Image (tube, rainbow over all chains, first blue to last red; front, side, top):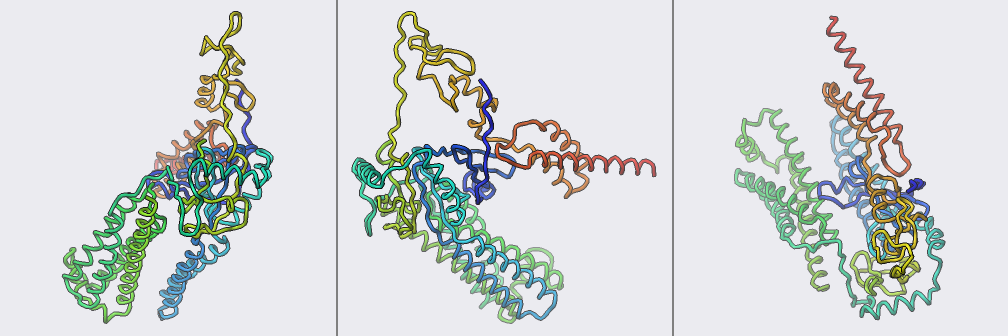
Length: 347
Length: 192
């Protein structure tokens, strides 16, 4: 057997994170597309130390399906809002170190908005062969996806030839007839099931979103009635929230759960992490000011002794925290209800 | 492929789409209103051609090594065994038997069958650089990085164009500098 000559690959634009692997590793699987002489090569790099390859031969590719997504717009709105909040905060601070710190944070978020604007609208690109129907995570920007499509279209045609539009209509219609399926029209559709995903069966997300609403109530109670009881309630809800964020992240992995619910869960995870960081900063500042007795009970008593209504900074932090928790809770429950409705409709 | 396997569905809601979507401009999915653009290629309707059954061997004819009752059709380019049409695997113009195909994949000789690779260059570079965060660790990791980089200098790595050699060179240079630094430091302590 002679050794086959190595294929010369050309890098195609775009790179993205794949959701494959365990839920912890998911964020670290970087995907990129390369163009070979007769195939597309998808390289999935795990942590940068190992690579797995998938080849999609031009002769086997049956279809590409591009779908515009609203991620670009949503990211711009969220990041723009955060930039605006930090900008306003920067303008209200009178202390120079505070202005510098907040100015840097504002500039950082502003840069993210700018970069996102530059990268252009988002989309998903699915590739279909006789045995695959999978997303190409590196083509999540419309500009990149269109560039790649334009690049490979002539290669596809030279590998497969062309078919007249009438022939496609005729053959697809006979496939629909054989499968006894009617194509989707307004208000009526047959839904195929994605075979790669497990059906989602868990209450973890529902509990998580109710806990977020609970946190909003606990924060509101603490603002109005600061006491040991409300502090303990707030802490208990936060602890339960932390546990359920982790449980929900594990449960949603590799399931058909609606993408919006997943995104809200990840935002809740980030929100919980930020809450802990703010909590630790507050604790250190209390200790630095000599207002903190030793031990956990001392910290609880110090929090109970604080009057949030008398401190604008603390009040703003608590109000923002309660508002974010409430928005996430409501949005999560609405998306979850939408998910179950769609599932019921399909079944 | 079954008729159901030929159907194109919306990636979001999995609603089966009609032909009006094919090779057209952006259109909204009737079920979820997602904007879609679908490009369909002739392979969607291609009938899979199954391998014809290998003919039964007649007296005086060469037989397949794996199926003695079948007539040999080709010779394996790897091991020279006679193969029937069922055992013949055509790969880039080469005719291979299943055993040679498996051996080629295991030994990494057939590039198109490689499904995963380890990035030894990046591992070497990481072993050389990351422990610098906790400086004293480099007394152990620098020789390891040096050994690893030399040991895997020729090991197969990524199949796409990359900075492989540069990473290895950087790893060796960094690790050598760390080793040299430690030798100098230990010598200085010993002398002083």
